[in-house]
Length: 103
Image 1 (tube, helix red, strand yellow):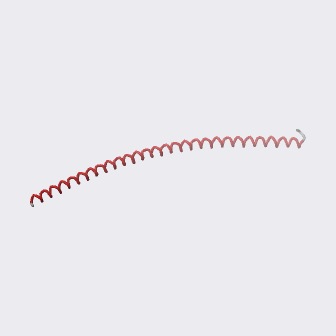
Image 2: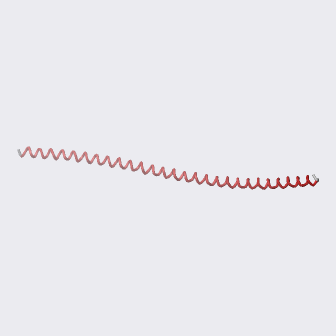
Image 3: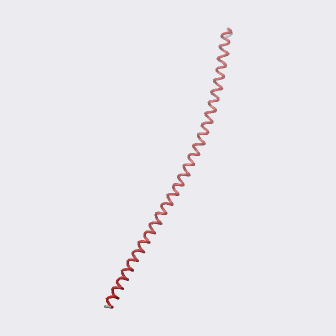
């Protein structure tokens, strides 16, 4: 009977070793998978940061162009107003001269 007990204990120890080795292998695989996932997340974060930087660059450029277009439009509007005032003055003088009979 003591021999059977020793064999049973050895068998249990062997089974325990096998289970521990499988658990270690599984834990190592989980850690490896976690590291790979972390790398993916970090690389996607970098890509996201690059996208944000690119977006800011595009928005900044668009603002500069919009400001320039606004300034150009204001200049053109001022020129049109000045031209319209000049034309109105000329027409007014022409009408006054017609009324006075000096055409």
